[in-house]
Image (cartoon, rainbow, N blue to C red):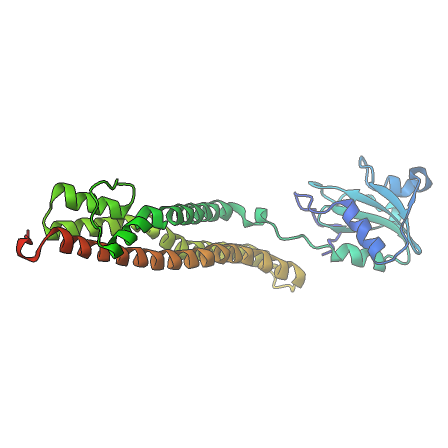
Length: 305
């Protein structure tokens, strides 16, 4: 995107002079570094600014400047002998008839997409990402079989040595056994306690549901905001403008939607997996509870609340 000499360079320098020189060399165009004193016109092309270097190409000699936060409307054109070309923070002042190959490369420099272009939306999106990672990791750790339904409990159920009063209360299954053997609750109370253990396994899952819904909406809000900013640059008189400006602006606006979906999709997968895992653990606890009822409460001693 070349900017005319009446334009303004972006506030942030997004390109380095080395980027431009590297692209020239990759295109196999001549680019020979000259001594600074060999081209006094180019050295003084922009007052109070020293060029990055003076280069000799094919019928085109140019000075390369890196000028963030600078206006270019006041450049001295040396009585029309110099041509100025810009892209973002890079300014090329040149002499010669073969400028097109070099200016096309300058025009082809594109600003890479980065998270900084998300603007203020990066903060709520990062919060969503943190919540999704934290809840998913914490639930995966808490739902381990050793903390819900250890192997020794399953082994005891299968061998008929159940319940065991020496078991501790480290896992949900052991806590259910402890309540059944120590407190002697009614059958309904024991089943209610079992349901409480299942409910505790679902702790934090609602946050994943919030992230799955909020992240895409934040991305959509960022996209709409970006599009409003892009279309606000359309000339009031209905001029065509530079199509590349609008296409690049729309692409940057869509970055927020990409970020939102990139957070929401893995979170949805994590939520679905955790729900399935909880259902599996809950079935095991239900089976345990019924075995306790059979073992601790003979049919003729079952009490109802």
